[in-house]
Length: 182
Image (cartoon, rainbow, N blue to C red; front, side, top):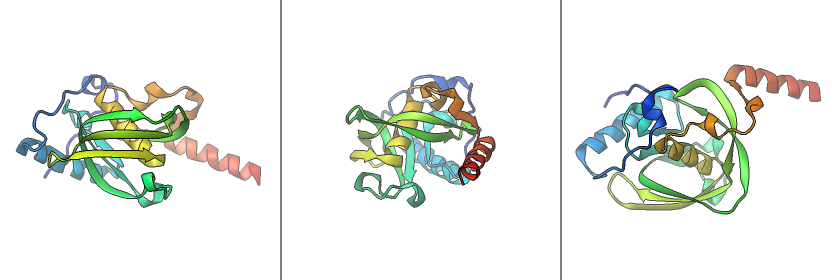
């Protein structure tokens, strides 16, 4: 396995629509998935899309860490999963602001409006059908990674750029607000 180089904001591969994976069980796709898992683990990410590692294919990894799970059935902690050639459907009109970061935009975070509940489908690395409904962090990470497959980065979804900034500065501002509220 190998740690892959992550594409940074502005790289053309991040701004294009990815192509479907012809054979999800092909050896080169299995190698790509193994390398992506190692890369995501090394970067301590919760998701990673193939375009982020310079591969314009419709494939991404995601997980729901216990500390980010709401505990709801459709937002339970989940180990790393693979979704190939996904489709995504919103369940209802409700949206939530969700703080997001991205391995391709290091050091920055922003509040992104995301659908509160979704249904998604695709196949896993064995070519088996995957179909789930999700809310909370689970829904957010899947939407974030799905966007990468269509050439969309999270700042493109933001509606209030006052909620976008450097991670450290946002943390300082939040701490100052909490101290002022005491």
